[in-house]
Image (cartoon, rainbow, N blue to C red; front, side, top):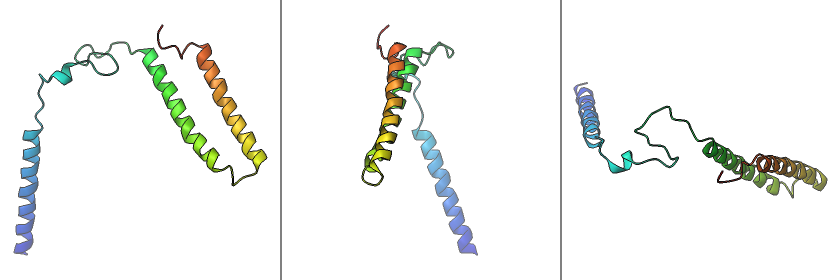
Length: 117
């Protein structure tokens, strides 16, 4: 019983020491040059918090996500080529690619693919 209490006390001391050590070592400098510089998306993090967000940056992100998901959906189609009927596979593939091409045409028609305005 006394051994269990000693071990528990030892664990408590070690855990408190580790927490105290991590608090001391993780002190952040407010004058850090990297923290004061603008971030990748182009706004200054130390300025106003309610500045307007760039819609162009948002649309580029959405296009990237669409094409990223597209790759994740194309890979299983290629793997199913030998497992299913060719007519079924080609119908699903053509339908999928037509949806992607219609979406790409819509983005192109709305000038979402232009990098500069």
